[in-house]
Length: 216
Image (tube, rainbow, N blue to C red; front, top):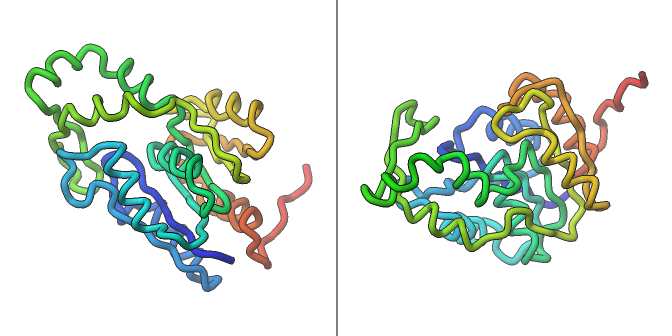
């Protein structure tokens, strides 16, 4: 199969547990995985536009499967909506409606954030707080809440997700016939269902030798 480009979530990094798990599994089948650092080492200046540029350089002109987690899932959908080189998408708890939901979630902090220019967020790679500039909010407003892409996609989502409710993925899949949805008894991180997810992903992208689901 073709190569995979994995997009990590917000305030994360290529070293995330999920990213490395899937990189190892794909490597066992001879599939290359590229995991770009979406903030390019400068979290404070992070924007959606900047991350799309990073994805563009990682993908280039060659065909690829895009795999994304949370905000990375939203970015994968957004990028695929305008790039035919993307063959398939695997979206884990994708942050659909991100621009609108972000403003709603931080509505009480937006005025101070704009006034001070930045706001601290916990960064999982550093296990500490890092400042994020207000331009992140301004830039995100220009992008659609639910990108429409034509490629086949597999969405994996936890029914106990309190960060990005699974209902959002259910609604998206119901209105997009090119999308398959798999739900798990898990939370947003999905780290307790990595092996079942890998089996689904492997079948979806055409890797042979993966066990079939047990009939219920």
